Length: 319
Ligand SMILES: *Cc1c(COP(=O)(O)O)cnc(C)c1O
Image (cartoon, rainbow, N blue to C red; front, top):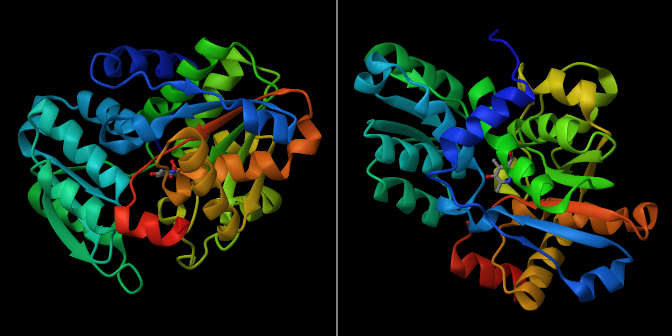
């Protein structure tokens, strides 16, 4: 296993990413604050390039390729946002990208990935193993595999969103972070540890896919079947070998929220804040709402992780 990243790696990642990524806004909602009795700060990564924080990790990882890796190209497997992130980062850096994607991925995500010029290889996420397919392609064609979360350069890149948040808000009392494979959460924990050490940081999973919470309880990486949830960005089956130790050692807790609460948050973001947020991007607010009593009167951050959802699907969910 490669060395685990530190906050120093997040700082260096930020230097590489900053000229190419948006510094996304930190928004507030006075009405929501009044209703929940909190001061909420929303880090809006739904407004990041390609629509999610994943651009940060992908760009950091690809910008560290040597000349030989750049020449051969990159391969990635993803249910959507990581695919778009690698495709966009690769096109910016002049690297060829091959993306292994589920054949039933949201249409907008598939189209966007192809639109960035990537070569898309479809697979069946209920019967085939994307990691095996990705590894085989890497070996056959000499491509460098960049996984969606379990990589030190990806983790360091994802940590730059929380770095920007804390730089803007100062220390916070709590921070709620969507959790799939743990790239975003582990990177966030590195930034929180350096910039707001007393901040209580929560990972938030969909109720149907609570492998992270169980892993924390059992002290080992628990594997589950692909969970049935509308939070497609968190349909991961297990935490990573690199992300788990960081999460285990630093996270306050991992909590879960039901899909119905994600829909309620999509409505709130749209109607009140004029934001289109995908279901996975609502995990943080759903958990902050559930735990509002615990942080009454305190300053609470929420990472709004992404906004990539087909308009027709968005309308069907919130309608
Ligand atoms: C990938 C993703 C997540 C989960 O991130 P991990 O690093 O896998 O934990 C959360 N929200 C969105 C929008 C994502 O694309």
